[in-house]
Length: 290
Length: 233
Ligand SMILES: Nc1ncnc2c1ncn2[C@@H]1O[C@H](COP(=O)(O)OP(=O)(O)OP(=O)(O)O)[C@@H](O)[C@H]1O
Ligand SMILES: [Mg+2]
Image 1: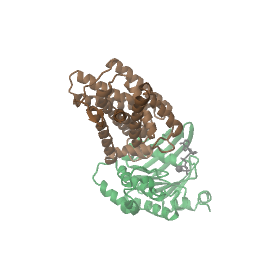
Image 2: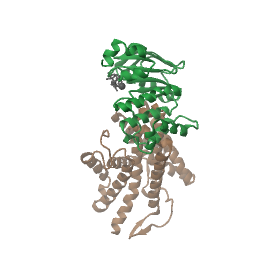
Image 3: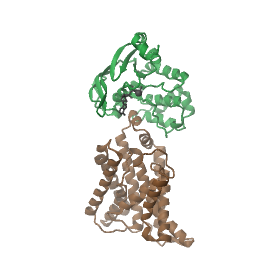
Image 4: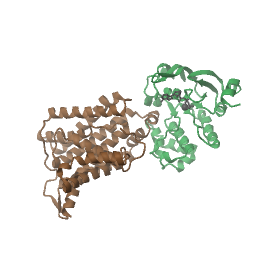
């Protein structure tokens, strides 16, 4: 039982990060129809910029804000320089563009930063807490709480502000949105920005637990993508549930079967979803598949 | 107010508007009638900027706007009720109306929402319901209301009567007929030519991408070519 709990805690912790990545996929997918495989690089930037800024003497809160700002700028640039000029291109072309952007960002990160692994000290120092025989790090609680806070803030933003509603309107019917005077290019750009910020926050929170380097985005994107697929691409609630489920599956798989298969679980989820329920757990039918 | 000269538009390599010239004067209701696939929707979309034009000019209050972005045209006072209503389905009725006022910065938005509810009381009852769950007629009213919320000078209406029960058609068209009293000029696209001509000052007849007839609505309503082709007489 203690072991089960232990696996569950670690599954939920990484799952929360996958959920944030999946939420990033969802936002951009809904607004623009693009599946952004550079989503993992936002997480990487969150962690790496915070690491290097704190190493340079910037206080942690400021470093974290800086990291979010850098990720947002990169997200906006990605949209304005790569996605928007290719408007009208097929879904496959757009995906290839985002994969190219992801490779470029990794390359740049390996030059601007380095290729080593980096850690951050835990934001809440102290011993692990004991719960039911298992131990949970205060930082894990912070990851879960932080992810929950992001989800709540995003929900408030989407359901309570006119800008959030303009995003929903643009996602629902872009032509009608333009007809009422919404600058949809700007709105889609904003969704890239929000998505980048969410990814970066995930990266900042999880780095004290999982380490980071220039290359962590690749697997994170894959796992976030499988989480989004599992939840039903385009469904924010599905993304969150999907992320937690993928995280839990991974932790239980690693614990009870073998940690060698840990990363294979996400692939397995993607394949199963594609074969068994192409619309995911909460998906609507008729979403374009690629 | 609106002067369209020799407007051309294409889908890929296929030209569907072959040089259309139309004029709308302030305070008028002008209708554009034509059968399926004539190019009516393409024309209205080109006017709003959501369909690219490949030639010609759109002069609005004296200035050529054919290169102005769609979201700016709505700010210049041109609104459209698109074909098939196109409400924002996941958002509530009220949010749809508020988004109509997206580009406005005045403080009469709340009062205007109430005006729309007075115009279409059924929308007031459903104000918190997602637009996607309204009936076709209610969605049409919402689409009209949303366009009015932009405070347009010119309203483009694309087949507002499509798919509605006769009683609702009358209700929608009679609210359209009242728009000039509110200072709103109307360009109405209809397949239902009888109903359209009845509330219009002037009309154009569009066939396969060309204007083949135009004139006073009353005289067109008696024109043989119109009665045969569009009035089913
Ligand atoms: N997205 C599109 N791609 C290619 N061709 C199109 C597209 N939309 C319309 N067309 C073609 O352009 C022509 C004009 O279509 P349009 O929708 O403007 O006609 P319409 O007069 O509005 O017809 P309806 O009365 O059926 O609404 C038609 O031949 C149609 O097949
Ligand atoms: Mg049409």
